[in-house]
Length: 296
Image (cartoon, rainbow, N blue to C red; front, side, top):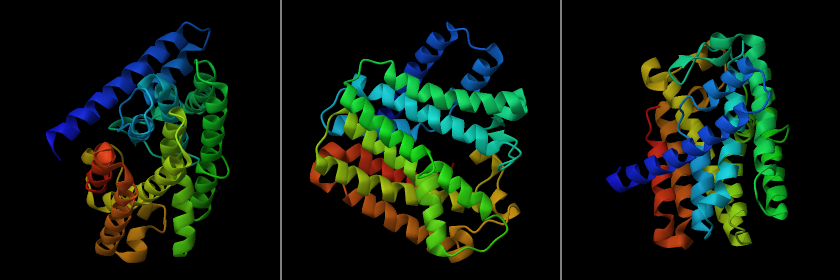
């Protein structure tokens, strides 16, 4: 991808990282148990692509908003994502020892510390939005969107289907529902929260929905592909975990080549959803293509 895209993505991630680090420093002034606080920072500030936060920021800009309006929402969604990864890795869930190229939170701090760190990040996400100077109506809309995406109608609901389906062969419709909830819901929430931050129009909500739902589907299909084609060094976490757990994936249903076709189709649909914005959406269009070609 061209240098302009890379530079803009790096600038976005730097802005988001600095905001998260500043929030962490502020939180450390509070009487929070140090072990849990350290475990929270270990997972929240420990790298990652920051794709969800970038979506919040870029959709806010696309709709005419300012960065300051988006950043609290960026932080909140990254906290929810970090909490979900901590819990995903626990022995009672996916039981993974590595995350982002280093020991997962429970391997580094212990199970109860990791569990509480995840719980604390979940609460901190909502605290972050409520403690910032955001118009009440926008804060409420954003938090409603985030809570729905991260709860039983979203991420947790998808995780339930995922765990219940281990060792079973499931149909395509159930697999798609699983990923629409477990992975796609939070990606969709990120785009919508960006529109909400800028007080965007209904047309913006519709475009963000179409883009993010297809981006989320492509993202998950590529995840399934990488689980069987990438190396552990590239991913920073164990590979082949889906096969070991007996999970149905896009690879087991369709094979690698057809899965690649489906990912590209969803990517193209996502990019087409932003045609009305012309060159203003160039970064988000490029982001969809880059994510479909990623190796980690």
